[in-house]
Length: 443
Ligand SMILES: [Zn+2]
Image (cartoon, rainbow, N blue to C red; front, side, top):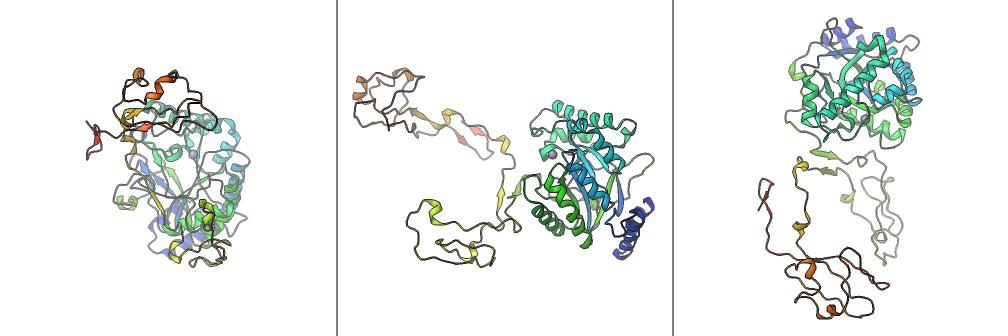
C-alpha cells in the first residue's frame, strides 16, 4: 500500500496512476474485483498545516484531480454507522470518522470496528455543542480533550490510532479556538464540499448533491454524517457514481516517527489565494438546480382575491416539464426562474454590531386606548417624553384622559372587547446616536 501510494505521488501521467489504482483495487479487496478501493494513503503533518478545507480556509489537502477524501461526522450510531461501514468495506474504501465523545462512550464496539476496518479515527468534540464560535477557550479545550480522551479510552491498547484531527461542531470556528488547536498540533478539518445530509433530504438528493459538487470542484474533502439513515442508504450509490466517473479515494493519516509525511509542495495545499473566512457568502442550501423544483406562486398566495380567470397553463421556459405554474397562476417570464443562483451574503463581522437598546428607538410614550365605555377616540401626539409618573397628567396629554383612572404601570389596562393596544408611539427626534464609517457607535 505504501509502495503504491508512493507510486501514485510520483506518477507523472494520469494513465500510469490509473493503472496502479486498478491493480490496487483488485489486489486489496478480495472478493470484490471491481471495487472502488482506496487509491493511496496521504500522510500529513498537522504541525505544518493546521487549518484544512476550502470551505473555510485557504488550504486544503494536496490532492490530485479526481481525488476525494471521505469524512463522516457525529457518530457512531448503530445501525446507521454499521451500514456505512458495510458499504465502505464492500468497496474497500477507507474514510475518516470524526466521532462525538458521548457517542463513542455509548457505542464502544462500533468504534472498535471502525478501527479494525482500518479507517482514520478523529475527534468531533465530547458533546457536540453548537457554541464553539462563542465559548471560552477553556470550555473549548475541555470539549476537545474530553473527546480525545473518550476515543483513547475506548480503543485502549490501540489508543495511538487516534489521529490529532478535529472538526469543530457545526463548523462554528473562532480564531482563539483554532489557535488553541493548532498550537497543540491538532489539525482543524473543515471541508471542501458537503451534501446537506443532515437536513433530512432524501437519499437521492444526497447522492445528487454529493456527486454534482464533487464533479464541479474536481477534488477535495466530502462531509457526510454516518448517523443519518438517508446517508447510509445513499452511500453505496455515491461510491458507485464516484467509481464510474473516474474518482479515486484517498485516506489521510497523521505522520508518525515510523510513518513520514507524504512529500508535497506548499502550493499544492493552497485552494484559494484570497483569505475568506466562511460565512462571507453562503449559498442557500436546497435552492440549487438539483433541488426539488417549486411551483410558481399564485396571486392568491399573497391574499389577492381577484385572480385571473383564464387559466394560464404556462410553463417556465428554462425547465420545461419540471416547473409548472398551476391553473390560475400568473405566468412568469423565462427570466424569472427563481431561485437560480441566489446567494445570501452575510456580514463578515456581524458579532461586532452592538445590540440596540430601548433608548435607540426614542419611545416618547406608550399609547393606551381610551378606557372602556368612554367612546373617545384615542389621541396621542408626538413630543418630548414625559416622566412615567406624570404621563397621564401631562399638560400635553388629552384632557379627557384625566377623568379615567390611570392604569397601574405594570398591569395592562382592561380593554373592551375588540379593542386592544396596537403598539407604542415613535417619536423621531434629533439623532443622538449615529454610526460612523468604522461601524462603532459615535455620540
Ligand atoms: Zn457535527
